[in-house]
Each structure stands twice: as C-alpha cells, then as structure tokens.
Image: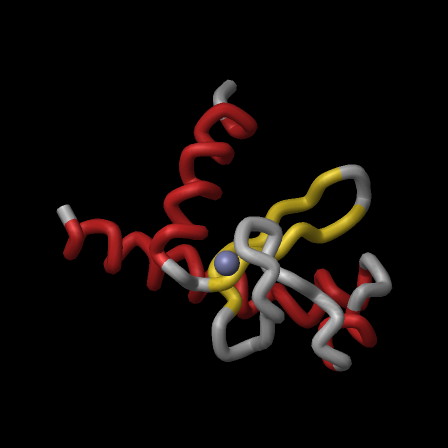
Length: 85
Ligand SMILES: [Zn+2]
C-alpha cells in the first residue's frame, strides 16, 4: 500500500513539474513562487520546486500542495470528487 502510493506520487510529480514553470507564468504566479509566497494549500508550508507535490487549477489560480504524504493524501481524496466524470 505504501509502496503503491510512492510510485503514484512520483509519476504525478514528474508530469506536473514539467509544466509547472509554464503554468506559473501563465497564471502570473511565477514571481510569488520564486519569492516563496506560494503556500501548501493543506499545511501552509512554503512550496518550492524541491517539495511541490501537486497542482490544481481553481478559479484561474493555481493551488499547490507540498509533497508530504498527508497533504498528497488530502489532494487525492479531493481530486477524486473533482475529477469524477
Ligand atoms: Zn503540505
């Protein structure tokens, strides 16, 4: 169970980081991110390239979380309801 979650986490992160800089620029949050102004939506830790866990788009703003398992877990639970067809 724990291993499965780790693998999923890495795959999701790899996809997201590829596009993260572009997304931050598109939504004009690049400066905030570089200045350490972007906080984890769940635990309010500063999110950087080193610890970004997930990215969601909500009301034309990027909502980032860090890569703690607890935060990732919260986002997965929320994403299931958001992304359900
Ligand atoms: Zn967090």
